[in-house]
Length: 225
Ligand code: ATP
Image (cartoon, helix red, strand yellow):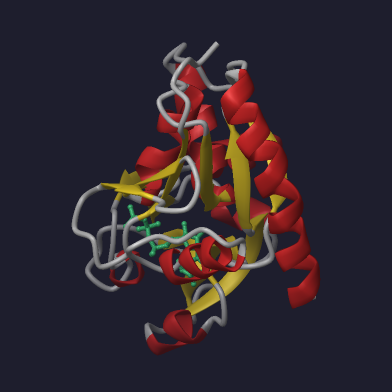
């Protein structure tokens, strides 16, 4: 059982999910000072602490029980869970609530001139990606072999500079792909942000805070529909 009395929530420090996450927490009535440069920010009107970190650190913090809750994209979550299963690290979490922001898809995209004739035409090719585990799972499910190189940003440039044949990257509108001479050929994972929870039992104090917070989060989500 986690013993401290303040509920600890991990959120993205800065990036595509941070504004929506911040506004969700504020609309739930949490007073947080976001100009605060501290990575662990106290909420002044509730026993809650907000830990502001990189997205990719959130799944591990929740799976290891360092944070009680986290708000993170399903793509990041699933990639981390697969990676941790491979390393025999703790990979469990509770998906407390899907959230209606951060919508995107993880797709395979190829240069416009590539002659795409179904998944088999990707066999033996090399892809630049930040999501090797999701790519490997897609390849295994479709009976093809793929190679990958890891890139944490500017993935779209990889085919043009000869680093990879194609890419496996997040897409929302498709305009970045188009601007880089790429076409989307397969969607391999659909994602939104989610609220996740540690599998460790919460202390009674923390559980009480969560019981107050969760209906508010669901109320805010409903109001946005
Ligand atoms: P961090 O920089 O915090 O380690 P990150 O590189 O994933 O993480 P962002 O680019 O801000 O940071 O993306 C955060 C999340 O936003 C993604 O993991 C995804 O769930 C969501 N997202 C929604 N649309 C897109 C998109 N078009 N491209 C990338 N991410 C998107």
